[in-house]
Image 1 (cartoon, rainbow, N blue to C red):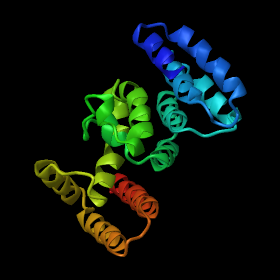
Image 2: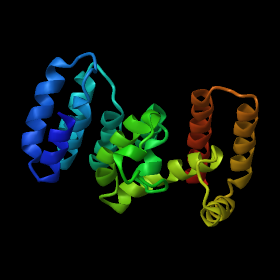
Image 3: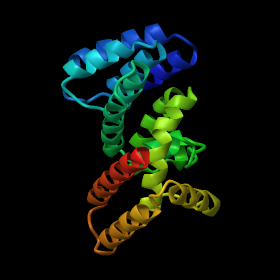
Length: 217
């Protein structure tokens, strides 16, 4: 179903793909099929932002693409900035690796054979979200700030020039000391072999706090 849906999207048959996704998601209340991934991507393409927010409120299951669609819909409907940031933080928490592919910080695998089994879902989500997120500078700005900070705190970045530029920007905005304290905290957790999901949760909390401080300075 997903291959058919993505093919229809690629061919510009978004409304047909949406119909298929709705049919599957209507009876898929256990999340056995990735129908919601296609459903919310189709709604994004059709700019159905109010409908996305309404659908999410009645959806019995949360999904990575659904929560990212919520963020984009909040941006496009003029929601409060704090609500957008909170929503984004939650969306990222469901799969913290997704935005690194979306923003091309990490390269997508060139073939299916290169996709690690543990990363298959992440790659799938990122594939469906890359175009909607990157469609405007406004959306990119919202996603980029927490992603790059999270990447620095958790060593998901490996470009030294990129890291140097980030540290310079954090120093210019007066939060470098906060960033380095948070990074040390995360490093201690990793040294203590804390669960990676717990480490990411703490890193996302630190990311949210630091970004709030940056915006208030």
